[in-house]
Image (cartoon, rainbow, N blue to C red):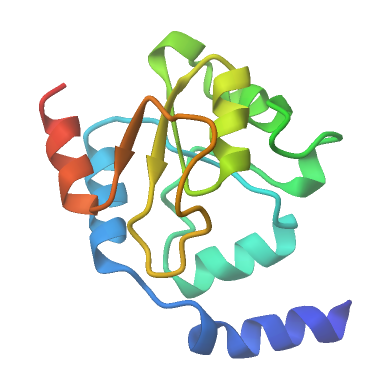
Length: 148
């Protein structure tokens, strides 16, 4: 495992590229007082490596990884844990995801779901479970948030 994490860190910059639009969006949301969280199936250690490489390790108020749940997405356990940690009611939350499992978890947690297809490497071309909203561009999502 140590070799895996060593190589993961070493090769990260070759495989995962910074997205300036997403970083700007996250910084804007954070400075506007939104509570931000991550719910991922990744192991905590690999997520922390990614956040460090992407210079995003200070942006999130809650981090729930695959290490923190018994039932991974599409089960809503991780999302419910994040909401509890953030002390946010499901009616005041939105869950943004790029996979079918993300949307299913959001629906099962009874939160507003946003399907995104704004990265060149997104997972889901067409959602079987219909998200409440879909955005293909970060800018369109940013504009929609500014209207709230």
